[in-house]
Amino acid sequence: MPGRVRVVIGRVGYREVNSQLVFGITKVTAVRTWIVHAKRSRTLSLPTPPPPFQVTVQVSPTFVPAKLDPRSQDIRHLGAQVAFGFRSS
Image (cartoon, rainbow, N blue to C red; front, side, top):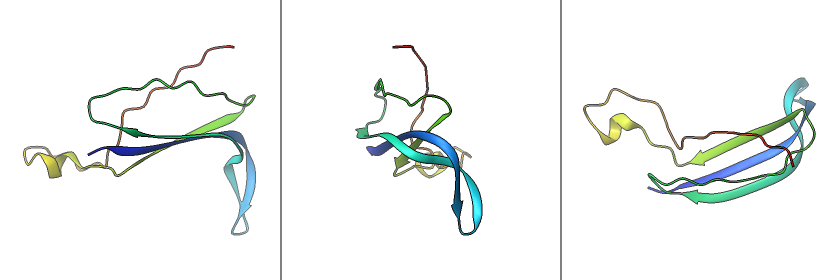
């Protein structure tokens, strides 16, 4: 089953949520979405703000290996294998 991928990059800082300070993205600088298919890869270059910054990756829907293969005991909800690298411009 294909998965929908959403990558969000942004500046990091503190913000108030429900009267509590939360550390995370305070200003989004880039958003990319695409569809990921099983056993395929994709390389994506995205601009980042100056450090510190944060990258979040969301994949939906997820799958549970134990539900696909009764011999598996892996009950984690998985979506995609993600790797990061950095290069200077």
